[in-house]
Length: 336
Picture (spheres, rainbow, N blue to C red):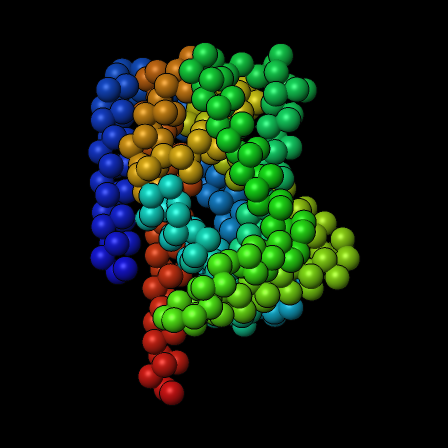
């Protein structure tokens, strides 16, 4: 396991840095130096502040999801859990490490394993609902204003359809407590004997705890879910606001709606890129998406600045949080 995340981290960083530097080299000319003279450091600092605010909001959301399931964690621990989860997602292909990592960290925070998985799925489901709202807005209300371009538009259409289907799948588990337990009850009876019996009994126990956690959440009424949804919207609003602020800091004047809508499409596609962190592919995709929106002579630096803010820095903070959690866990084991 240790070697897996190290390998994923090495692959992710290497691909991202190499591709980003190639793009900077290919787009660098005399006009780039002119644009660099238009830098506004206050907006670059504001972009970093946006990132920190997003982390703070997500820490509170993770705390509220745990509270809805009956566990108490403070805001600082919620931020550490988020950063550790981000790190796990960035160093695994297609972000597959995110839900297992969040489940594990919720479990260590006091929730049993079944309820921890339920909390992780609820968090993801609320995020899907917010993104589904964005899809509806882009497809319906803003289609005339937001021009994706032929490649980005086709990508957005396909990914949006897949995303909508997975949202329905997640909704089945969240909105209908008891479904998972019912599925395990239908397992073949012959599995209840022999060496598989202990595994089946444990899985059935965790399925019951999964459904119990959801029932606790629904029993608390809609207010807690409303607050979680509100924080989710706030997080993604701040997160997508980073790109226009970075563009302004680099002296680029572009329509924020064009910047954000194309980033939205790329964010939807990111989980389908089979490379840790989408490294290499994300940089190339951005180069294609933002041609004509961002001047060519600053495009490479624009992409590098965005990755520095939304990938390298969260990766560093996430690694520190994950290692801190691991050392704390080993220390408690040593004491016992």
